[in-house]
Length: 511
Image (cartoon, rainbow, N blue to C red; front, side, top):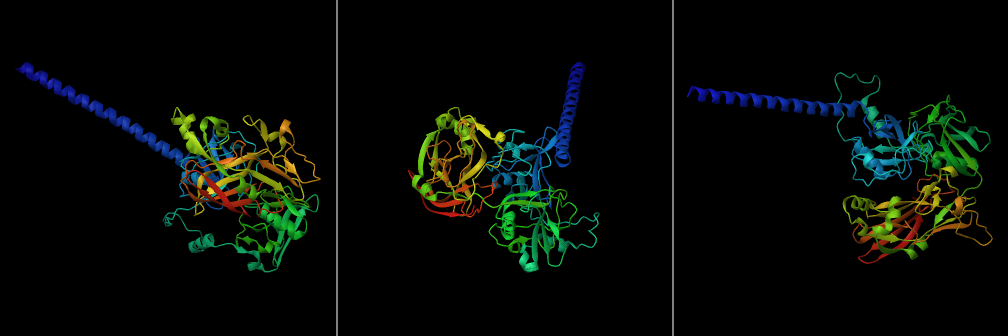
């Protein structure tokens, strides 16, 4: 009996010890897991993790140029194919509700690092930029002015003043908030007709840094943040130097030691005088001050592209096509993201059908100078599927919008091989894609992408039949200067029925 009692007691003690050891082991495991989570959180907040992004050179934390961390170094994101959908993903990753606008052409200054990402393409459902498609890390054809940036919506949370943080002396919080909310005003509203402009520091009269005199103040320079071809167009027109060719934030023409008298300048490009443009009142801040001086180049003649909206209406039609026949197009992002999900998840993906809205894009140069691609010839991209070089990665945007203006079908961004397909009588074609030929569109000539060419469509598989707006935009990123951009978009009504589609009532307008 004593032996039985001793055995039972021994077993109970061993079980208790085993349970204690198991509990301790679980506590150690949980402890390690908690420490790992805390370490990861700390690194996310204070350190640098592969693929994390940040905003730089903005005037506040919610705006700036995008940079991404890869291989232990920061790099920039190129603005080719970059749009608001991509910007929304970036803002959400950074903790903001979404994007107000996506910025292009180094809106917050030129790139300070190498480019990590080019041709970023997000569907909008991604949680991180690294989930989006792109050409591959470090593969790009971008210059330092082609930086993608964003202005994010700010969280509508109340500002809490910490007791251990001293307030900014002499600057009331209400004044700071009021200034941040203050709308832009035209230069004429503030200074009247007392606005003068000139170009200085150039090698010729038609180039140089832009200097302005506001009222009775001394001459000064304009901050390069947000400086674009639109502001340059106005100044060239006002000075009688013709058309803008380039708008550069640079100190190549000097100006680093001059006072900045104007920041946040914004023009539509159609104004006759700089004083009609908008600006940020009483704000001369300029992040990245060194080398961030507004400069430009003017030319006497300029190209002017116009899409043939009648040809769009005449040629638009539906086609259902299996993915097996669209594999080349998939390499160039010519189908919606749902097709790529099918490719990953369904072994018979190639048998699935896509519904395509096909149409002919015919673009004519009605200007006074040839339209030439902005990147040098040695950076043109070879497309193995189509067996020719594309000189402009994003030459056109094709979009379907709903009644609220929201993009309802994933917009296709078309890269083109630019050539003279047909010319007016007496005009000799100069540009041809074949055999690595020179690319462009001559004055009086037309480049035609017929509806039966690969990728000359928009994938509408994922939208329901109904009434929509169809839009075709030429030179959408304004990277190549033109006489005007008021005729670069064809906006049409689209009726999409169960078995057919009709595009009608097209008008030419500004993108």
